[in-house]
Image (cartoon, rainbow, N blue to C red; front, top):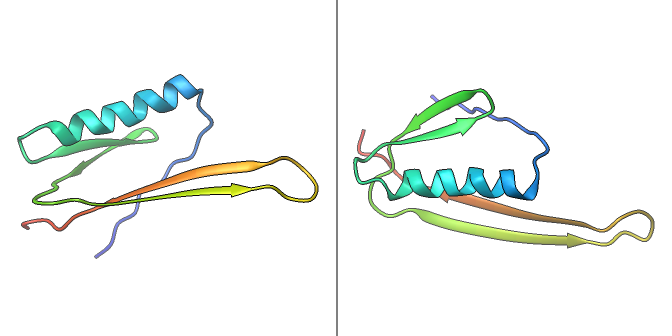
Length: 81
């Protein structure tokens, strides 16, 4: 079974940094479980062992319109369950 929880919103630089710091703080915990805030929901996850870390940066400068930049970070692991 696969469950996906998603949320999108516009944040200030500071608020986005706070969200990333909160996730980093959860990953540093040694109790084996993390809480990830997704919109108005909290999702419990159980990373174990090594985490696969992928990062992608995209820069798009169309002929018309504004330049767009994005950073996509993916963390993936297997669980002991």
